[in-house]
Length: 442
Image: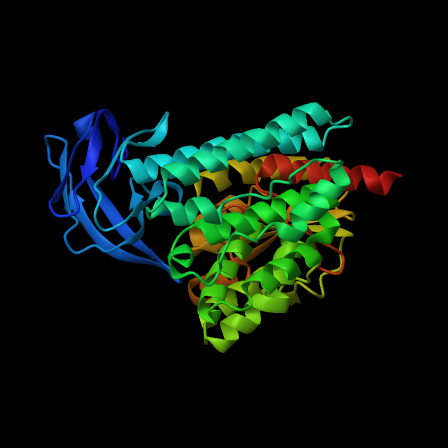
């Protein structure tokens, strides 16, 4: 079992004392190793501290040196998928319970009020959007949900009055009309007023996960309402709201938003964001890593022509990808003879190609190898492919050019070597192959 690296409190809460050691007891104690605490900042996060969890399941963290702000507690690997955030006002202790099934439940007043507010408002907004986007919206139900929003907002603002949590409750207040007339008017007014309560120049808000969340919420909601082709105007709206804030903060939050678009396969939107705003911000801050990342993604997006490369065939003749003209479509497969998944999938792909006219679709299999011999032995059984060997520096170079982070990795190309598909897994690849095969027969 991979050990967890934070906190599963099933029976008793985990207390963070502002002027004492943080103590907690975890169950089952054998599943835990250590905890990592980060301070969130406008440009990301900074390490605060970590500690080992003892054999008895107990943990200690010292909050004496920590100041008011938002924090992130990591409890497993990978870090980006296993964490939760909380606020700390510099005075009140923070307490919570956490389990994999129910998530985090805060018992200190400020985090409890904030998280209950966010969860309740999220549920009502989901129901509201569902009703509004239905074929026949029920006006009575919509007005009931809008009144619930008002009640939730007023209660949270009253409960959090004069506290640090109040800043976040007010900043996340959604647009709530005084009276609902029709769907079109509601969404038009909501779009115009969406960011009214959120101050992107506030340092405490910048130093939290809320800027990204409200940007994602705006984009997703109005993509649903207006259609996916409106991504340009929505991204322009988002930048307009950010333009008066610190440029390094802009770069950070837009880079996070770009990654969110990439993760959701919104490639056109991601490239538009990069081309029009993010690349310029990265350049102004000399962020060469981000610039390279943006360029690489764009160069490997659907519609882009892939990087060229050369190889020598069994007769020592030099070939290039661009000059290869033996089929209408190509499957570019990056694999390795020491990769178990590859050794399972490549023979199946080879069998699949027995049923496909090689003048229409051809596989170019690029072996990313440490040694020649295992690759040679394997390729003898894969006789339906054009084989390319890459070792040492050549292996590293083509891996970077094609952003290969695991094997097997597939690209489907047209005859001009432009990407028409980036299938994740062999089933998806076979679906594309079958579609191309059916299309050519029409």
